[in-house]
Image (cartoon, rainbow, N blue to C red):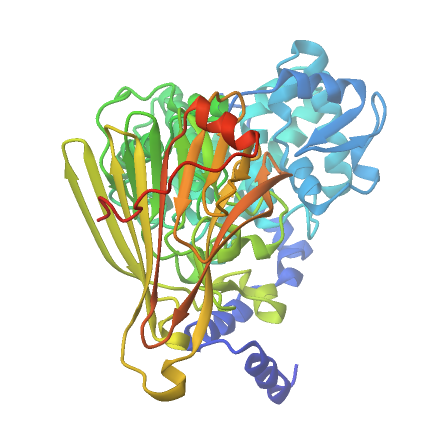
Length: 595
């Protein structure tokens, strides 16, 4: 590409110097031509493994029903189906989506098949050999780093079962394939985002393989692991990407490696054991009352059974949790639990899955999700727009995004990093018997509007009430017509799919009920306008329709604005009056008791 054309492309993308430097660095890395060359592939072939060593165990739970469906001739991954008939070939036909293809080539389904004993092992071997005939040498998609990482891990954990029914020649092929993929994984250098995970996976593969090949892989991976774990795992156990799910998945992989090293009698690096302990605490913190994870910053809530599998060996159990972890704060009473993202999103290479959703929150009532976010993650297949503020339970001012993903050519090279994101400038928290306060401010709208956004939360643990206040505060004085200009803003509360909402006749109060709940909860507020609008929540890779409560107001540039709301328990008699169309109960002062 001519230099002038490249410069114009960067100008149109409007990227700053840090992104420009990262883009130039990425373009200098070895390209696809080198990676797919015969010479590079030959380098990955030696030395050959000599049988197996450890038997790594993936602690993620298997799904025997999914294995039964595969034996019957169909893959169901993330809610999408590929039917090929018994003993059919899924590799010679198009997948329903790119997300489905990534899961298929990631081989996470091996453990589901192996849950069925010999029939499952034979089918797993057949499908694996069919895959290697088409994709075993190299393929741009099948050897894409994230797909390769998960396939290498899953094959390393299943290789003993795969080799069981295989011939000697097939067993040698499978071992050589695993070694080649692990070496290729270690050769990648595209930033820190998955560097720790790749070192762990390569070490797991090395532990599984016998002979000099396995020892060399294990030694090389373990030497890299301490520095990469130090970058990925913060002192409080949170992941550098700020994704709770990323912390959980790394915790799963490290537990597998720890067990494999124990089988070999190899001492784990001290930094690895420290990371395991820290991640255990973070996973404990992010597990909410329904057993699922808090879903923020590119992480899904995940199934409670899945999360419980990671915590099965957590000897700390339910000991007292810290009030915050990774910039997230938990405030909770008897029935209510609130998780708040009170920090800015990750930056640079760590922001590939970050979300521009300032001071977003999730609320649970009686152990059920009530107020949520979109639940977007890189594996859900949802649009990038779900990473913006509109898709979270937070405030939005005007048409300005508080961080948006890269697009066009820069995104092709660097990935969909988040750019122009906000920073949290202030966090204050107080705890007293029966009451908790949290106050945080962010600067996402300072550059365009000169307004600081501050969110205050107060939880009364005795009455199970949450009072909130979203304020827009001028950072500087504006005079004349510019200062008198009004900017519309909204505060959104996205509801979980199993939650219903009904606006009372006063057009202010909203009755919220989770499925199976007798009474429900009142959301009262002093907004200029209240409406119920469609929403979407991603769960298990599927989009589920829901609702969102939208509170609207107007912020004057020289005076700001304030919107107050309160969530409190409803009662059966109140609910019946609303259903019958009677007037709502008298409004309450939402400012009472606010922080």
